[in-house]
Image (tube, rainbow, N blue to C red; front, top):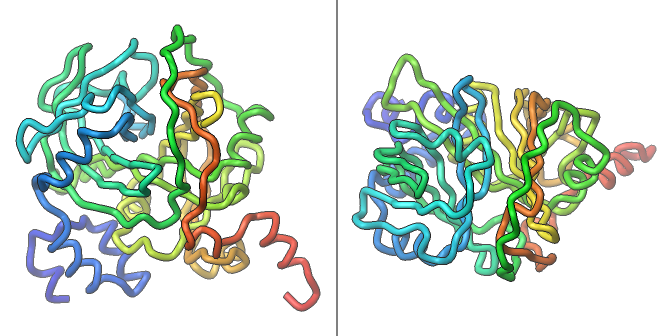
Length: 328
């Protein structure tokens, strides 16, 4: 196609392949060339500066992606110019994302404001880092639509003394229960792009649904991919590098469940996709390692209202009950 032959495309080969499979290649390229910028517009710069947390995706020394949340008082992330974002650390380093932030590291950032359901993405490379924080140079900056975001208000609380991370390789019953009732999580992915360094980088994205939209089978999670995802940043990375980092938030306690592992993509005709209302494809995650960070966040939140799109999607319980009916 003409767009593929006219570099530079904002999308790497994995993203382009997923767009073709979905029949969205031309539309995604047209929108991407208009929306994806090598700098932050002033609106995004102001948006990041008002947030109390950022979702961050990074890659550890062994090449495994991790997702986590970095928090601070509004203003802990500031933009001195359109090409850079400066982030101040609060509290001691105690998760794999903080450990992976060093000069030269590729990071994916997602600024998300839960009460307004606004979100903006920022991918780039660390140009300076020390225990007080880091500076990220922008590779790509773009907005995301508010679909599937659970509306929430945050209540700030006093920082508690940090607990040591609990490291594990098997999901406990408590972990499984948290995941099975989650309506929100964050996913990190990574494209090493050994053949084209211009496309190398990390990414982090939001995933939302009704409680029960993530199925837990032992150490495996099955996750639908809903309508509206036409850039395919996450699944495009999975196509080239089938590894993921997931971050689940216990909003009541401020605790974080961080997981890293392997990914299998599920095509649109897979039985787990065809039975799930709202799903166009899906993916299966298998745990390699996890960390539990007790009361890691300086805020708490209860449940709010669902986005209209979310209410039109399934849960695994509903999908499997319906599929078992004689006239399904």
